[in-house]
Structure formats: structure tokens, C-alpha cells
Length: 405
Picture 1 (spheres, rainbow, N blue to C red):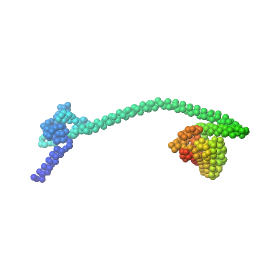
Picture 2 (picture 1 turned 90 degrees about the vertical axis):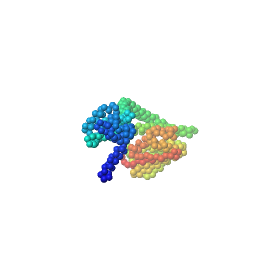
Picture 3 (picture 1 turned 30 degrees about the vertical axis):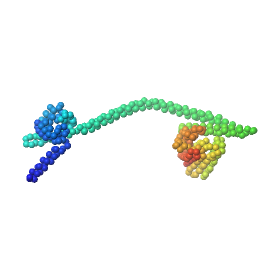
């Protein structure tokens, strides 16, 4: 065998192998549409056994409703054969031996042998592709439906929000009115109570001074109790007045040069009336004496911290007030050996009206420490604390020692 014959033989075997083993269906037909050759993939695709497609016409593989029109389409193609895809932008279907239909993708080509023209059809089953496309379409439709539903819900929510805006405005106006009423009441009550309390306190002091006779001890005990009660009521009223002024923005810092140990000594004397049996107020002064502070603010801060230490400490315990003044900073510590603050509640300690669960039976407004914080903020000061349940609490205050600009 010559090299040329060997080469031609290899070419024929390669083309035959390509035809036989191609995964897509390949059908060769003549001008009349008669199937002259079909590869195994096409036979499986259309449900025919080996060689069963030979002799059939192309129209046997077209859905019956398109068979007649397909004859004309085939004749038109034979008049001008060329390589092309069939049914561009159209859904094409083929018919199996059992007459079931399935979607296909078809490409056409041709070749000539002598005067005869033959058509090659490449057929691919696209059932899975169509299924995926249908799933995507369904998912898009479901998504659009959900978007429409959510849009509708949002629109309804916006309408409801608009309708509630007026109600909210009315509610805010009502709340403002209640706050104004509360402010007027607190101011009135505080001022109305202050005068009779001062009178009671001065009268009791006179009774205490001029008492005589066998019942001196009993009279003195009751006088001390009355003094303590009046002092507590005064402290409560001071808290209300301070809170009211802070809310209204009527508190302004007025720093003056003052003798801080002297002021603390005066506050300690004022607190003697509410000390429990055996309690003592120990005062330690370190450093300088003169500091630049707002006298009324620092006095209220000391009253709150010391009165709290007294209230939350048991009998026969000492309360330590430690003061250190240097040219830049004023440091004040108030330390007690009282009940302490539960760990889980310490983060709320400076909130308005907060009362720890272990202090519900002790008199107080829950305003004091909140007021202390606001006073310190006005003077650019800070407050920190350490507390252990059953062991006591220490407050640490730091305030800049500087003249007011």
C-alpha cells in the first residue's frame, strides 16, 4: 500500500471514528430528506435501534404539527445550502420514535459528492438546559413577587407612619405639658416646705438649749430624732431643687477662692444630726487648703456623698473624708464600711432615680449621685468608685484647681 493510500485510509478511519463516537446526534440526508446515515448518538436521541433510522425521512423526526411546513423549509435550504443554526430565537422540538417531543438545538451544514448535495444535521438534546432556564425564570418570578409584597408592606408601613406622626406630635406636646407641670410643682413644693422646716429646726434648737428637769435625756433624744428627720427632709428637697435647676439649664459655674478644709468641717458639723449611734466622720486634710471651686456645687456634692455614706453604713462605723489639694488638682475621697453595691448593678449607679436592690428600704430619692455627676461635669471634674458587697464603698473625685476664665 502506498503512502497516499495509507494516508487516505487513516483519514477515512478518523472521520468514521468521529462520526461513530460523537456525543451529539449526526444525521446525513439527501435532497429528498431521506436519511442515509445516522450515528449511534442520534439513534439513542430519537429512541431508535441500530440502523432503524436509515430509509426514514427527516419529517419523521419533526413534531407532526410541523411536518408539512418542514418539507417547504427543507426545499428552500436545498436551493441555497450553507452552514447555519436552525431556529434562531425560536424554540425547536424534535419527535422520538414513541412520538414524545423534546427541545433540541440543530446546526446544518452540507457537502457535495459529484452532482449530488447532502445535508448534515447536528442535533443536541437541550432538555436539561430548558429545565434550568425554567427554574431561573420561576426563581425570578418568585423574587419579583416577594419584592412586590415587600414593597406593598413598606408602602403600608409608610402610610401608617405618616398617620401616626400627628398622634406622636400630640403626645409630645402632652408630655411637655406634664413636664412643665412637674417642674412647677417641684419648685412650689420645695419653696413651700423650706420655710416651715427652717422654723421647726430653729425651734427645736431652742428647746434643746433651754431644757431642764428630770426628763432631760428623753427630751434630748426626741430633739435629736427631730433634727435628724428635718435634716433628711432638707437634703431631699435640695435634691429636687438641684435636679430642677439642672434640667432647666439654670446652673452656672461660679468659681471662687475658698478654704476647702473649712467648708468640709462645716458640712461635717451639719451632718452630725443624722449620724447613727456610734458613727463618726473622720476628716483628713493633705496638701494645701485654698482651692478654686464653685462653693455651692462642692457643698452639695459633699452633702450627697457624706449623707449616702451615713445612710448605707451600720452603727458604730467610721466614715473617712480625705482631701488633697495641690496647685493643679483637688482630690476628695469619701469612704464608708457599709453594705456596698452589688456588682451587677454598679453600671447603673449614676442613673437618675436608680436605687440598688439592697437599698430599697433606705430613705432617698435616687437623684443624689446623678446630681453629683452633673455638677462635676460642669466643673470639668470626674468621679469614680470602688465597692464590695458587705465591705463598703469609696468615691474618688478629681476637679481641676484653676481660676475661672
